[in-house]
Amino acid sequence: MSSVLNANVSENLVSRTRGTGKDLVLLHGWGMNSGVFEHFIPLLEEEFRITTIDLPGFGENNSLVPQQTYSVASVANMLLPYLPDNCIVAGWSLGGMVAQQLALDNPDKISGLITIASTPRFVSGPCWPGIDADLLAQFETQLAKDYQKTLERFLAIQAMGSDTARKDMKAIRKSITAYPTPDLDALKAALGLLSSEDLRDQIGRIRQPTLRIYGRLDSLVPTSGIDRICELHPQSDTVVLPHASHAPFISHPQQSADIIRQFAGAV
Image (cartoon, rainbow, N blue to C red; front, side):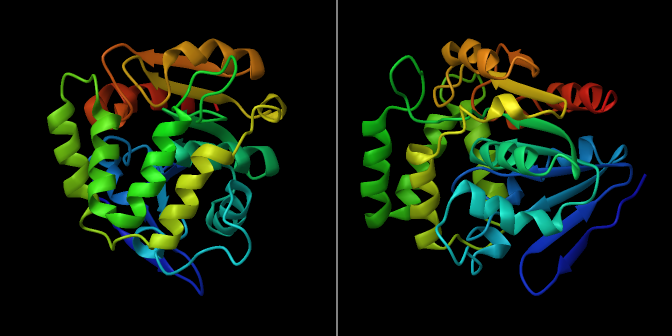
């Protein structure tokens, strides 16, 4: 089945829609844009109408940032008008945190939630595995000096451990360079969210069917924290891909698509 790519430009954000079927929204992670889903979307577009929206300050929306504080809540509020009714929202990494916020605030609009290599809190803390706070501080310092070098290092960490790490990095790099570069202030602000945002006390209120996909080799969202997330949100379903790292839809696209398809069939 052929599909038509439509770019919808309103007074604010740009969104893109492909495919036909149940509505599925894909949200990218920090430093990226919707280009990361370029090779993943074709595996789903015959069964889903897929909407991608670059986060404010990134990709095609690099000139548009929240007027108020850059936070998960303000980003979610900006995206909300562009989400189809009764949609499933799937967010990767930082996009998964935004997706969780959207699900919490909009139970009547969002029918299902999927997080991919994501968490309600990224930074590590007492009894909470995550990204080392010192590492995030290093990224924040480096970002002011050299965006490209910082992004390359972040990409390397995301692919770390995967058997296809070099191939994964190359694929991500190639896909995102087709889009405009992000706004530097948005990059800094969004990186700060990895250190500051914490939805742990809230995710137990998510009532939509929820699927959480992890990579066993992920060093940014370590599997040692999965049990804690399950305790906070016991209603969610969990799938761990044994050979994947932080970008399972890149390293294991068909397996990831099959998992999403199976979940969406019951939503």
